[in-house]
Length: 275
Figure 1 (cartoon, rainbow, N blue to C red):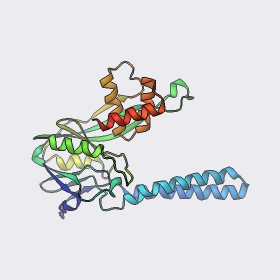
Figure 2 (tube, one colour; figure 1 turned 135 degrees about the vertical axis):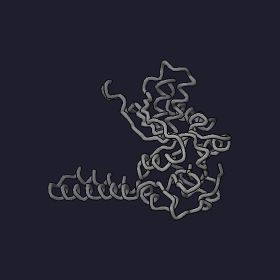
Figure 3 (cartoon, rainbow, N blue to C red; figure 1 turned 90 degrees about the horizontal axis):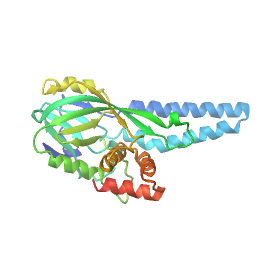
Figure 4 (spheres, rainbow, N blue to C red; figure 1 turned 180 degrees about the horizontal axis):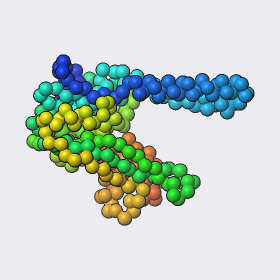
Protein backbone atom coordinates (compact mmCIF):
# COMPACT_ATOMS: atom_id res chain seq x y z
CA UNK A 1 0.00 0.00 0.00
CA UNK A 2 1.39 3.36 -1.03
CA UNK A 3 0.13 6.93 -0.62
CA UNK A 4 0.74 9.60 -3.22
CA UNK A 5 -0.31 12.97 -4.53
CA UNK A 6 -2.87 13.14 -7.30
CA UNK A 7 -0.27 14.42 -9.78
CA UNK A 8 1.97 11.42 -9.02
CA UNK A 9 -0.55 8.80 -10.14
CA UNK A 10 0.83 7.06 -13.24
CA UNK A 11 -1.48 6.88 -16.23
CA UNK A 12 -1.28 3.70 -18.27
CA UNK A 13 -2.75 3.12 -21.73
CA UNK A 14 -4.88 0.21 -20.50
CA UNK A 15 -6.13 1.74 -17.24
CA UNK A 16 -9.82 1.44 -16.43
CA UNK A 17 -11.07 4.69 -14.87
CA UNK A 18 -14.29 5.19 -12.90
CA UNK A 19 -15.41 8.82 -12.64
CA UNK A 20 -18.42 10.96 -11.77
CA UNK A 21 -20.43 11.47 -14.93
CA UNK A 22 -20.18 14.98 -16.48
CA UNK A 23 -23.02 14.07 -18.86
CA UNK A 24 -25.46 13.41 -16.02
CA UNK A 25 -24.62 16.76 -14.45
CA UNK A 26 -25.16 18.53 -17.76
CA UNK A 27 -28.49 16.79 -18.29
CA UNK A 28 -29.71 17.90 -14.85
CA UNK A 29 -28.58 21.47 -15.55
CA UNK A 30 -30.23 21.43 -18.98
CA UNK A 31 -33.48 20.12 -17.47
CA UNK A 32 -33.51 22.97 -14.94
CA UNK A 33 -32.91 25.54 -17.69
CA UNK A 34 -35.73 24.10 -19.81
CA UNK A 35 -38.10 24.02 -16.84
CA UNK A 36 -37.23 27.62 -15.95
CA UNK A 37 -37.77 28.73 -19.56
CA UNK A 38 -41.13 26.98 -19.63
CA UNK A 39 -42.21 28.66 -16.40
CA UNK A 40 -41.19 32.07 -17.71
CA UNK A 41 -43.25 31.43 -20.85
CA UNK A 42 -46.26 30.37 -18.77
CA UNK A 43 -45.87 33.44 -16.60
CA UNK A 44 -45.74 35.70 -19.64
CA UNK A 45 -48.79 34.11 -21.31
CA UNK A 46 -50.95 33.83 -18.19
CA UNK A 47 -49.53 36.85 -16.33
CA UNK A 48 -48.78 34.55 -13.41
CA UNK A 49 -46.24 35.99 -11.01
CA UNK A 50 -45.81 32.69 -9.20
CA UNK A 51 -44.36 31.11 -12.34
CA UNK A 52 -41.69 33.81 -12.50
CA UNK A 53 -40.89 33.25 -8.84
CA UNK A 54 -40.49 29.47 -9.23
CA UNK A 55 -38.34 29.98 -12.33
CA UNK A 56 -36.12 32.33 -10.36
CA UNK A 57 -35.74 29.80 -7.55
CA UNK A 58 -34.78 27.11 -10.05
CA UNK A 59 -32.18 29.35 -11.69
CA UNK A 60 -30.79 30.29 -8.30
CA UNK A 61 -30.46 26.61 -7.48
CA UNK A 62 -28.70 26.08 -10.81
CA UNK A 63 -26.22 28.84 -9.96
CA UNK A 64 -25.43 27.09 -6.68
CA UNK A 65 -25.17 23.73 -8.45
CA UNK A 66 -22.79 25.10 -11.09
CA UNK A 67 -19.81 24.33 -8.84
CA UNK A 68 -20.86 20.66 -8.77
CA UNK A 69 -21.20 20.59 -12.56
CA UNK A 70 -17.86 22.28 -13.22
CA UNK A 71 -16.09 19.99 -10.73
CA UNK A 72 -17.02 17.02 -12.90
CA UNK A 73 -14.95 18.45 -15.73
CA UNK A 74 -11.87 18.85 -13.55
CA UNK A 75 -8.99 16.37 -14.17
CA UNK A 76 -9.30 15.17 -10.57
CA UNK A 77 -12.81 13.85 -11.23
CA UNK A 78 -12.18 10.16 -10.73
CA UNK A 79 -12.63 7.74 -7.85
CA UNK A 80 -10.94 4.50 -8.93
CA UNK A 81 -8.24 3.79 -11.49
CA UNK A 82 -7.34 0.17 -12.23
CA UNK A 83 -3.89 -0.51 -13.63
CA UNK A 84 -2.13 -3.77 -14.45
CA UNK A 85 -0.60 -3.88 -10.96
CA UNK A 86 -3.38 -2.68 -8.70
CA UNK A 87 -6.03 -0.16 -7.76
CA UNK A 88 -5.57 3.58 -7.28
CA UNK A 89 -8.25 4.86 -4.91
CA UNK A 90 -8.75 8.61 -4.50
CA UNK A 91 -10.22 9.24 -1.06
CA UNK A 92 -10.53 13.00 -1.40
CA UNK A 93 -13.83 14.07 -2.94
CA UNK A 94 -13.67 15.47 -6.44
CA UNK A 95 -15.67 18.43 -5.06
CA UNK A 96 -12.65 19.44 -2.96
CA UNK A 97 -10.23 19.64 -5.89
CA UNK A 98 -9.37 23.20 -4.82
CA UNK A 99 -7.53 21.92 -1.73
CA UNK A 100 -3.69 21.94 -1.72
CA UNK A 101 -2.27 19.76 -4.49
CA UNK A 102 0.62 18.55 -2.31
CA UNK A 103 -1.72 16.55 -0.02
CA UNK A 104 -1.49 12.76 -0.20
CA UNK A 105 -5.01 11.91 -1.35
CA UNK A 106 -4.56 8.71 -3.36
CA UNK A 107 -3.75 5.25 -2.07
CA UNK A 108 -2.37 2.52 -4.33
CA UNK A 109 -3.52 -0.97 -3.34
CA UNK A 110 -1.81 -3.89 -5.11
CA UNK A 111 -4.23 -6.58 -6.17
CA UNK A 112 -2.46 -9.06 -3.93
CA UNK A 113 -3.56 -6.97 -0.91
CA UNK A 114 -7.26 -7.18 -1.84
CA UNK A 115 -8.56 -10.29 -0.13
CA UNK A 116 -12.16 -9.99 -1.35
CA UNK A 117 -14.68 -7.63 -2.94
CA UNK A 118 -18.41 -7.42 -2.29
CA UNK A 119 -21.26 -5.23 -3.52
CA UNK A 120 -23.51 -3.82 -0.82
CA UNK A 121 -26.92 -2.24 -1.35
CA UNK A 122 -27.76 0.01 1.60
CA UNK A 123 -31.20 1.27 2.54
CA UNK A 124 -31.48 3.91 5.25
CA UNK A 125 -34.61 5.23 6.95
CA UNK A 126 -33.87 8.91 7.68
CA UNK A 127 -36.36 11.10 9.58
CA UNK A 128 -37.73 14.21 7.93
CA UNK A 129 -37.02 17.43 9.76
CA UNK A 130 -40.63 18.55 9.13
CA UNK A 131 -42.55 17.73 12.30
CA UNK A 132 -45.89 18.65 10.67
CA UNK A 133 -45.87 15.53 8.55
CA UNK A 134 -48.25 12.65 9.43
CA UNK A 135 -46.70 10.05 11.74
CA UNK A 136 -46.62 7.46 8.94
CA UNK A 137 -44.56 9.81 6.75
CA UNK A 138 -41.94 10.93 9.28
CA UNK A 139 -39.03 9.26 7.46
CA UNK A 140 -37.81 8.72 3.92
CA UNK A 141 -35.74 5.94 2.40
CA UNK A 142 -32.30 6.64 1.00
CA UNK A 143 -30.50 4.05 -1.09
CA UNK A 144 -26.87 3.87 -2.05
CA UNK A 145 -24.49 1.39 -3.62
CA UNK A 146 -21.22 0.52 -1.92
CA UNK A 147 -18.21 -1.53 -2.96
CA UNK A 148 -16.69 -3.20 0.09
CA UNK A 149 -13.00 -4.12 -0.07
CA UNK A 150 -11.47 -6.56 2.38
CA UNK A 151 -7.78 -5.68 2.58
CA UNK A 152 -4.70 -7.32 4.07
CA UNK A 153 -1.59 -5.90 5.68
CA UNK A 154 -1.16 -2.95 8.02
CA UNK A 155 -4.22 -0.72 7.62
CA UNK A 156 -3.29 1.80 10.32
CA UNK A 157 -1.87 4.34 7.78
CA UNK A 158 -5.04 4.14 5.67
CA UNK A 159 -7.26 4.47 8.73
CA UNK A 160 -5.30 7.56 9.78
CA UNK A 161 -5.44 9.08 6.29
CA UNK A 162 -9.20 8.63 6.00
CA UNK A 163 -9.75 10.01 9.48
CA UNK A 164 -7.59 13.02 8.69
CA UNK A 165 -9.50 13.70 5.49
CA UNK A 166 -12.86 13.72 7.27
CA UNK A 167 -11.65 16.07 10.00
CA UNK A 168 -10.14 18.78 7.78
CA UNK A 169 -11.27 22.24 8.86
CA UNK A 170 -10.05 24.70 6.19
CA UNK A 171 -10.41 28.36 7.09
CA UNK A 172 -10.13 30.00 3.68
CA UNK A 173 -11.78 27.61 1.21
CA UNK A 174 -15.14 25.86 0.97
CA UNK A 175 -15.26 22.34 2.36
CA UNK A 176 -17.69 19.91 0.75
CA UNK A 177 -18.51 17.19 3.26
CA UNK A 178 -18.43 14.36 0.77
CA UNK A 179 -16.39 11.35 1.84
CA UNK A 180 -16.52 8.61 -0.82
CA UNK A 181 -14.16 6.24 1.02
CA UNK A 182 -14.66 5.08 4.61
CA UNK A 183 -12.95 2.60 6.88
CA UNK A 184 -15.82 0.77 8.53
CA UNK A 185 -13.96 -1.69 10.72
CA UNK A 186 -10.57 -3.01 9.62
CA UNK A 187 -9.97 -4.76 7.32
CA UNK A 188 -13.10 -3.57 5.49
CA UNK A 189 -13.09 -0.36 3.42
CA UNK A 190 -16.28 0.91 1.82
CA UNK A 191 -16.31 2.92 -1.40
CA UNK A 192 -19.54 4.77 -2.11
CA UNK A 193 -20.32 4.15 -5.77
CA UNK A 194 -21.68 7.27 -7.45
CA UNK A 195 -19.46 6.94 -10.51
CA UNK A 196 -19.64 5.32 -13.93
CA UNK A 197 -19.39 2.62 -15.15
CA UNK A 198 -21.49 0.71 -12.63
CA UNK A 199 -19.81 -1.38 -9.89
CA UNK A 200 -20.43 -4.65 -11.73
CA UNK A 201 -17.78 -3.56 -14.24
CA UNK A 202 -15.29 -3.12 -11.39
CA UNK A 203 -16.17 -6.55 -10.00
CA UNK A 204 -15.68 -8.17 -13.41
CA UNK A 205 -12.20 -6.69 -13.70
CA UNK A 206 -11.22 -7.66 -10.14
CA UNK A 207 -12.56 -11.20 -10.50
CA UNK A 208 -9.27 -12.35 -12.02
CA UNK A 209 -7.27 -11.02 -9.07
CA UNK A 210 -9.31 -11.72 -5.94
CA UNK A 211 -12.34 -13.42 -4.42
CA UNK A 212 -15.78 -11.98 -5.15
CA UNK A 213 -18.18 -12.36 -2.22
CA UNK A 214 -21.94 -12.60 -2.70
CA UNK A 215 -23.72 -9.22 -2.80
CA UNK A 216 -25.83 -8.28 0.21
CA UNK A 217 -28.51 -5.78 1.18
CA UNK A 218 -28.44 -4.00 4.54
CA UNK A 219 -30.82 -1.60 6.26
CA UNK A 220 -30.08 1.24 8.67
CA UNK A 221 -32.73 2.83 10.86
CA UNK A 222 -31.93 6.40 11.93
CA UNK A 223 -35.47 7.10 13.09
CA UNK A 224 -35.85 4.79 16.09
CA UNK A 225 -32.61 5.02 18.07
CA UNK A 226 -34.02 5.46 21.57
CA UNK A 227 -33.52 1.81 22.54
CA UNK A 228 -29.83 1.74 21.59
CA UNK A 229 -26.89 2.37 23.88
CA UNK A 230 -25.31 5.82 23.87
CA UNK A 231 -22.29 4.42 22.02
CA UNK A 232 -24.48 2.88 19.32
CA UNK A 233 -26.49 6.09 18.98
CA UNK A 234 -23.34 8.14 18.50
CA UNK A 235 -22.06 5.65 15.91
CA UNK A 236 -25.31 6.03 13.93
CA UNK A 237 -25.11 9.82 14.16
CA UNK A 238 -21.51 9.76 12.98
CA UNK A 239 -22.41 7.57 10.01
CA UNK A 240 -25.07 10.11 9.04
CA UNK A 241 -22.48 12.88 9.07
CA UNK A 242 -20.05 10.84 6.99
CA UNK A 243 -22.83 10.20 4.49
CA UNK A 244 -23.24 13.98 4.05
CA UNK A 245 -26.38 14.19 6.18
CA UNK A 246 -25.11 16.59 8.84
CA UNK A 247 -28.40 18.47 9.19
CA UNK A 248 -30.25 15.19 9.63
CA UNK A 249 -27.73 14.16 12.30
CA UNK A 250 -28.34 17.46 14.11
CA UNK A 251 -32.10 16.90 13.99
CA UNK A 252 -31.80 13.33 15.32
CA UNK A 253 -29.50 14.52 18.13
CA UNK A 254 -32.10 17.13 19.12
CA UNK A 255 -34.77 14.47 19.15
CA UNK A 256 -32.66 11.97 21.14
CA UNK A 257 -31.12 14.24 23.75
CA UNK A 258 -33.57 17.17 23.93
CA UNK A 259 -30.86 19.58 22.76
CA UNK A 260 -31.64 22.98 21.30
CA UNK A 261 -30.25 23.75 17.83
CA UNK A 262 -26.98 25.27 19.06
CA UNK A 263 -26.32 22.41 21.47
CA UNK A 264 -27.08 19.79 18.83
CA UNK A 265 -24.76 21.41 16.28
CA UNK A 266 -21.95 21.62 18.83
CA UNK A 267 -22.50 17.99 19.82
CA UNK A 268 -22.38 16.72 16.22
CA UNK A 269 -19.30 18.81 15.40
CA UNK A 270 -17.55 17.52 18.52
CA UNK A 271 -18.53 13.95 17.71
CA UNK A 272 -17.10 14.25 14.23
CA UNK A 273 -13.88 15.97 15.23
CA UNK A 274 -13.12 13.48 18.03
CA UNK A 275 -13.48 10.32 15.96
